[in-house]
Image (cartoon, rainbow, N blue to C red; front, side, top):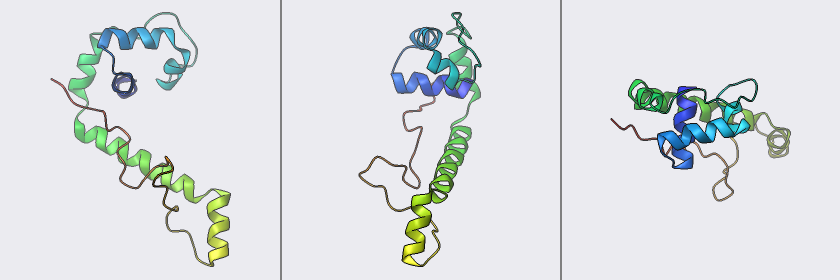
Length: 119
């Protein structure tokens, strides 16, 4: 929940208090944080975001990011389109086709590029 809350904060560009308010009001953000049902109460106080930032190192965030990118690349290789392309080329897919300029995930892309540790 901590990392998810910080991702939401950075993506929305909001203050700690506004981030918690957005999470309280938005069932999609609550689901993103792992909550199983909508609740109209804030899941944590705005002051907790400061604690989350202190406890989550940039190294940990980079490790999580690397795993997300690896999983996305592996999933792209398993798609029927990628398998069909490999068959027609007569070779095994070792990585998905380049998605530059089409909004796809690039190897080494930083999914959390807006994350900054403050303290």
